Length: 105
Image (cartoon, rainbow, N blue to C red; front, top):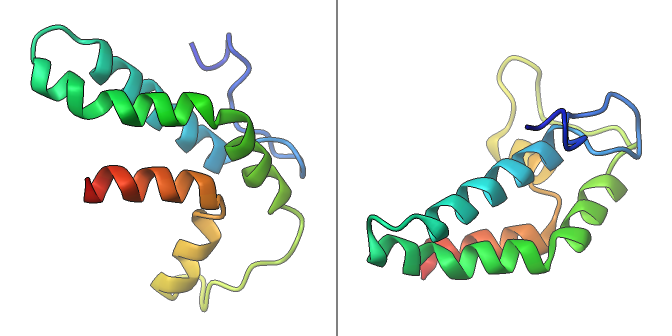
């Protein structure tokens, strides 16, 4: 599925990388949870997340690509600083807001 849709991470700068892959995986699971028909409460809980991710996909991918090409200080290779690593791995404010809203909602 990922390869057929061209969503495999690229090794080139300014092309979607693993962070974009994480977005696509989150979007896929939110869609599936919202569409499943076994648990109506679960579907209702995930529907806004799925809708938010779908509506903002272009903006999120743009943010994930635009952050590339600059060195990132993680505070260490084997024992990175958690705050620095989180900032590097969560560069999309739009994606973060949607996920944080879901987590806190």
